[in-house]
Length: 306
Image 1 (tube, rainbow, N blue to C red):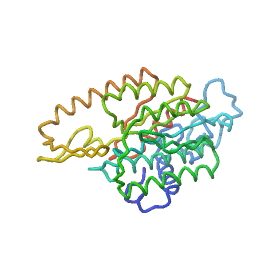
Image 2 (cartoon, rainbow, N blue to C red):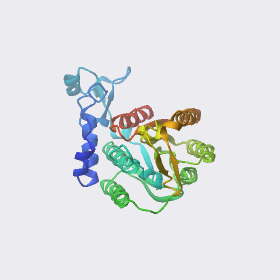
Image 3 (cartoon, rainbow, N blue to C red):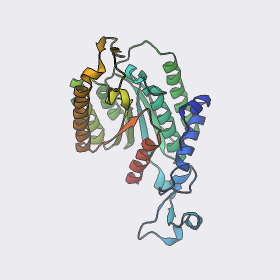
């Protein structure tokens, strides 16, 4: 079971939080192929017909009564790149304990920790309308600490509630990233998809660009479901502010909820179909829920690539 937000907030630095998140996640995989493993689980995979019996790990069999094959470093290495949206809309929080950005940073830190333990070369890109930072893919511990350093800086920025309005233009940033990644990688994108409607086709085009460059793509849509999907606010009038432009509008949610939900569901359905057509994996992350399902989605994607 993942640690709750209040306890995680008491831990520092981010690397320690990431380790606790991953260890809690792994300990909860009771029925997964990694049952009984430590955070070194990537060194094994389920036995497949035709595998040499000499590679079976009999100690694991004794614990789980299932056959697992020892997997060697040459088999486990991947190149992975985490692309994190740091635009102003990611600062949003209403019902959840954490903003979308804080939630995504902790998820990114857990992914980086997991990737490093799996000996995957890991890179990091921070973007809004432009690429703000790009770290190349490396698998060293010193590089992992550098990733945490930059994620910690974003956490500090989030604490200060910076008034710098950083707009979303994911398509431009992802097109640029597709050109900069010189070797085939698994690209994990964390974003709230807070684009202008006119920019949705451009975003799909950028995802196709990544696929055209032979990269695998896993897109996580980070959102606060209760507010941003359901518009589930109490009765009364609310003042909504666009966190990227500063524009404001007064709304009575109960009067527009049904129409709002219908339009959001229609857009999301179309976007999911477009992602599927582009062979891009699409997952939603609700910031009011644990990171377990998101981590499991990543692991399932990784397994399919092995």
